[in-house]
Image 1: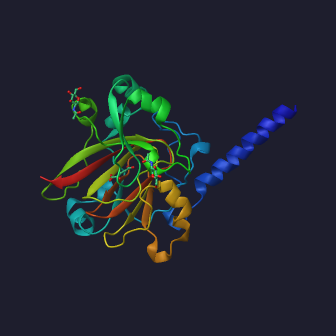
Image 2: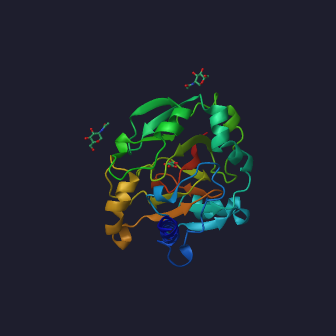
Image 3: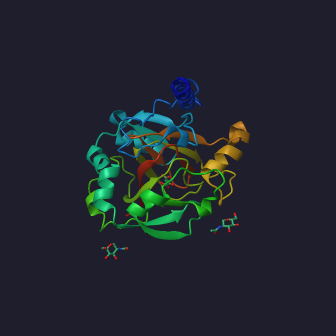
Amino acid sequence: MWHFHRNILLYLCFYVLHFTTQNEQCDGDSCSSDVTTDKNDGGWYTDFREQVAKPGPCNVERVEAATLTQEDFIKKYAYTAPVVISGIKYNEEFRKMCSKQNMLREFGSKTIRLSSANTYSYKKVDVTLREYVENILKPQSLYTLGNETLYWFGDNNYTEWSDLFEQYNQPQWKLPKTEGVLSFGLAGAGTGVPFHFHGPGFGEVIYGRKRWFLTPPEQKPSFDPDQTTLHWLVNNYPHLSENEKPLECTIGPGDLIYFPDRWWHGTLNIDTSVFISTFLGPM
Ligand SMILES: *[C@@H]1O[C@H](CO)[C@@H](O)[C@H](O)[C@H]1NC(C)=O
Ligand SMILES: *[C@@H]1O[C@H](CO)[C@@H](O)[C@H](O)[C@H]1NC(C)=O
Ligand SMILES: O=C(O)CCC(=O)C(=O)O
């Protein structure tokens, strides 16, 4: 009898914890707790106890894909401000290919190149996708250094993975005189890439949720390049003054974020996430 009650009690505790976790850090209409992936995680399940970081508010401008014209994209965002474009509907086939079952079946024995998750990622390690998924892809621990965390993002072999890359439809909004180069990734809850900058580009979430932090080129955020984004979130973020705070948004499947040239950005995966960036470089 006690066991029965204890289990019910435990279940309730976890339910309440889950519920509050999901709803924290939402202020007003910029709440992002509605971005959940519980039902459509492609098999990349994340237990809520493994969600070491929470989603945050969204103060990046948000627009519906169907209402954003190319002209408005150029006028309002391309050279001046990040934007989150929601309701991307043309990558459903790609999403299916990125399910855990399909990825392991089609690509499990292929080699992927992992990078250390620090700002100037220099350490590279080659493993099979299966080895990565089964032994390395784990929730981030707060005390592991960024330079000692392995992250799969980019360094993709487009020849070996052509079936996958050919299926991805790049964002329909274009920046004149640039073309997109793809970087595909898969990473555990709480992992991310600390602040860095480069040319303009887009990041799309396929599965999971990803929290993005951004600051303009002239506002270099204060961070330790060897620490993880999670470490920064816990230790630095709470002490930032209003004008030091970065813009941020937690995005989920079907959301696409655009970052202009040289904007600082750092990322944090809330769940096990599959994602792809389109880097815009000179043609
Ligand atoms: C990671 O960086 C720390 C200093 O921030 C250093 O002590 C440590 O040796 C580095 N680890 C690796 C694997 O480079
Ligand atoms: C990509 O994979 C192919 C086929 O396995 C291989 O021949 C080629 O060297 C790889 N390219 C790179 C850049 O690693
Ligand atoms: O998606 C990520 O975690 C990293 C993305 C990123 O840093 C980029 O697209 O430049």
